[in-house]
Every structure is written in structure tokens, then in C-alpha cells.
Length: 295
Length: 251
Image (cartoon, each protein chain N blue to C red):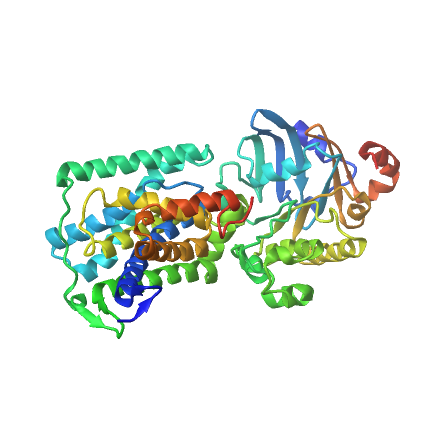
């Protein structure tokens, strides 16, 4: 059997794939956090809860409305975005201009509230959610068997991440967003409805978490705590990539997923903490993060 | 007429040819947090005029522009633009009323290209310059249109800051110290641009430390001190006042 550094190839590729899948979720979630933090200066601790909400929205659409995976892939993020925008308009808005700590505490409380609410109604055991018919089974891609749904998750998250990046870097609304991130008062003085832009941006960031939630539903079980398990690592990813950097969030997300996967092969004992070790090193050497600007 | 009208528009020279002021500011007060920065500013800008606010550093010139624009929300008094009060208009609606703002720090965005910077402010009214016309006036900006905005030289950034407002079709521009820290040849260019604005009928309320520069392009002057307008005169009265002004402004 082929081996690389004494490791059987299927073992290596298998872990790499798991790393890439995890990296897909890290990238999607840290991208949303970066977009929100960039413009709103809010550290959105509720992001994991919105991810969970996306998964539950998909589960409810299926079980209560009979809407399947593909419909949920569009509807669930929309629902999450609307919830996010209502929260921004009615509550989060009051915290702009205050110390970052207030936004952080508020969203942290919001996350506890959402998770607690779902735990009350659904308990801690997960709800099963089947992958869509078209994506069941596996494909032989030469050096390994690739489960179709996992391949789809990697492709879909890449498309969403690159699409988001293109919207921000190449479109007019992206130019508003970038400019408002630098100096929102001036952009508003130019006649751009910045309060609306803030609402839409928060909604969009939450929708990205919602997409991740729908993609995750068939892989992991739909459970009220799925977000809080993931979000701690995602915050480490954001710190490593640099707060507010769009491309940094995407690249770091995938990179750390892969590093974690490789670690499981070569030094499994450290796999659970490798991200945090990297975070500590980055904080010591480059406090602004790998892609962050010193300010 | 109220008492403040007679104070700020002395009877010696009739301004605006009988037209109503395009911008009318009365008893404008403003605060930065607890600090009371403006103590009742009165001024007028008539259609097509270039009006300059003179004064030493820290007397409230920039604050006056920011309070008129509504960037400083903690303010009191009256600001009328084209006979309508804009005191209660939200900041993002002010530009749509026809008022443009070029900040002292120029506000060029580093994460936007020159062209993105140029096309960022929404067009709020007809009569703005086309992109082609702007590139004709500022060929440098055309050459560097793909570079990040802040890679331009200070002079080019100032040109860009003014150019992007020309596109929007606003009828009055609040322009804060456009010549600050720029070489004389660039200052000359900015003077030409302001003259082009004048031929287009755009009014300008200018804050300027460079008294000689201002004296060549302005129609009317206000002198500020301690957050108030303390003097007002037209360009024809300037020669008689030069010496007194030099003393007052400490130049």
C-alpha cells in the first residue's frame, strides 16, 4: 500500500477530507463574523446560535412544511437573516457607539437564550436529518472513496465563500461596505443609507451562518448545542486570520481545518488543541492576525 | 429682518442680487461631548457664491461645517438649505437635499480603487459632471484609476476628494481646508478647479487657513473666533482689511 511519511494514503486522504469539511464550516462561519465585525464592530457571539438556527430551520421546514433540503438551502438562511435583521433593528442598534464589550455581552446572552430555548423544546439529543437523495452514496475518485455529500459541502462552501468575497470586492454594494468599514460617517454624509447597510450586513453575516447550519444538518445531528461546540474554534480561527479581514477569514478557515486533519494523522493527541496553540503563537508574533492590518 | 440678519449681512453691499440665501445658518451651537464648541454661528451663502470662513486654529471652522452637514448631531439653532430646515434631516438624506461635503482629512478610502472612490457618492441630482468630464479635468486620476485610493499623492487625493463630489450634482459644497499641506503648484490647480465649480454655478463654503489663496477665489468672507462669527465682509472690502486681518489671524 502507498504510504506517505509512513502513513497509509487512505488514512491521510480521509483525515484531509475531514479537515477540509471542518475547514469549510470554519471558513463560512469566520467569514460571517469578519463581515459583521468589519462594519458593525460587533463581536457576534450569537454566531454559533445562528448556525444552529439554520440547521433547525432546515429541520423544521422539512418536518412541518415538507420542504426538502434544496428548498431549505435557500429558505433557512433567509429565515436566519430575517431573525438577525430584526434583532439588529430592535436591540443591537442601541449598542453602537458603546464599548465593544456591550455588543459582545449582548450577543453572548442572545446565544444562551436561543440555545436554551431550543434545548427546552428539543432536548439535547440531536434530530436526524437525511442528506438529499441526489447526494447519497460515494464516488471513487481514484485514490479514495469520496462520500458525495461531503464533496458537496466542500464545493458549496467554497462557492459561497468566493461569491461573498466577489460581492464585497467587485460590486457597488461591496464598495459601500468597504468604505463604510473605513469611515461610516463620511459614507453616510455622501448620501448612502448606512443604517440600512448595517442591518443588511448583519443579516447577511447571519445568513452565512445559516447556510453553514443547513450544510451541517445531514453531517452532524441537528442539536441545540451544535453551535456552541463549534464557535469556540471559529473564534480562534478569526483571531488567527485577523479580525475583519475577509480573505483572511476564508483562507485561515480552510487552512486550520486541514492542519487539524493532518494533526489527527501525525499526532492525534494534539488534534483538539492545535488550533489554540497556533492562536497563541500568532497572538505572540502577530497580534493583528495573519491577514490583519496593524492598527 | 431679525437682529442677526443685520449683523451678518451688513447693508454696505447687497449679496445675492436680491435672491434668498441658499444656505442660511442662524445661532448654530454645537457640542463635542460636554465641550461647547460653537456659540451661535450666523452666516449666509448665496447661490453661486464662494464663501470663506477664516480664523485661527481651533476657533470652530471645521466644527461649523460638520454641524451644518449634520455630522455633529449635538447641535442647536437653525440651518436652512434652499429655504428648508435641514436640522431634523438624517445624515444620509442631507446629500440628497443637494449639499456635499469634502472633509479636512479628505476621506479617501484605502480599500477602494481610485475609480471606486470616485463613483462612491451616489448621484443625488442632475447637473453633476460625467466621469469622462472629470477624467478630462483630472487626467492623473484616469491614469491611476485602478490603484488603491490612498496610493495617490496628497495633492491627487485632494483632487479625488473634490472630483467625487462634482459627480453627484450637489449645489453647494462644504470644503474643509483643501490646500492644507500641499505644494504651491497643486494649490494653484485646486484654485482652478474651484473656478470651474463657480462657472457651473456650484456654491462653496470654504474653510481655509491660506488667506492669500482664499482672497483670490472667494466672494465673501467670515471671520470666526471662539465659536462665533466676529466679522463679515465682501471681496471688495478686502484690501482695506488686509492688515487688520493679518493681525487677527496671526499670519
